[in-house]
Amino acid sequence: QAHCHYIAVKNFAETVEKLETKAGIQKIMKHLCDLFALHGIFSNTGAFLHDGYTSAAQMDMVTASYLDLLAVIRKDAVPLVDAFDFTDKSLNSALGSYDGQVYQRLYEWAQKSPTNQMSPAYERYLKPLLHNTLSKL
Image (cartoon, rainbow, N blue to C red):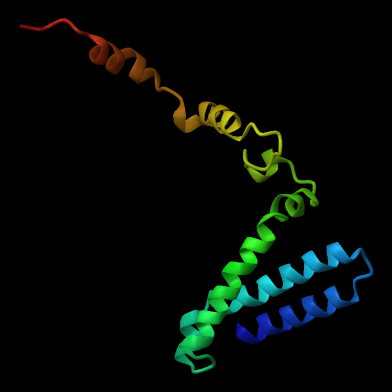
């Protein structure tokens, strides 16, 4: 698994180096490549430590670099996803819009969700029972 990840990272890095595009785009792609490389190590911390490939101090540096890189990439996350031109519906996401209506959209999606619809049994049996305020005594 580690060797496969190494080959993928190597190919990714070589491709990013050869990109003939704007410097800003190449910089973002370099950050993504670095994140991909660090993610392979970060997600297999135990194996790297157990097999002696890294020390605890090195893993601390990997973790710090990984978290720092996430913060750097965060501002580009939505534009990167938008570049694929997926719709919010195909991603099943109400969050990927810049219109500022995230909470309104989440509320609307929750209202439409089948899991949030009332069962006919609720209307027929439970609702009258719950809303009946008359004492039975």
